[in-house]
Length: 245
Image: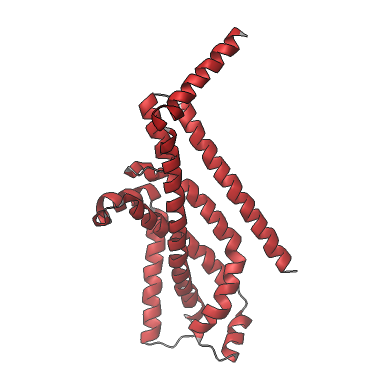
């Protein structure tokens, strides 16, 4: 009984020093806010980049054999080449290296580390979103393109009004999972001095010299976020399946 009482008193003391004393819990709240902010805007940017890159790549793959030689074919091939370079570089280098380059070199002129993190993670996410959306576009039956032509749409209008909406519906669960992965990927933002959730726990550890409790708190918050968004993704998938019946 005495050992249990001593453990409980030690727990209370550690909890007080880690979270209550000097309002250290605010580091976690601020970090969580930055984590969600970076994730949200990075996902929006990633989807925009991903749609553009996917449309260029899918258009080239579908039309490279049918397009007549000329400036239009050369231009499409040029942009397809740029997209392939982008995908190779972004997916072939670690996101933490991209973040450090963005914060300390390439995007230093912006002067706001959170904004830079949104851009870097958005560009990184865009490379993966592009392949997700491209697979969705390539899965659409060729008859849908012919239906667009029969309605008088040109290629861009067909992609905008017919193909992209269907592709989005097919890949929406995968995009939602990319959002969940992105939440966890932002945990490296602290390497660039950005106070995200992980960095908030690390600051508490540095102030109190207690590693277990603040890091367990960080892990628990990430777990709650992932479980919550996984539940939302599952609900979304069930709704999509029911709408197809």
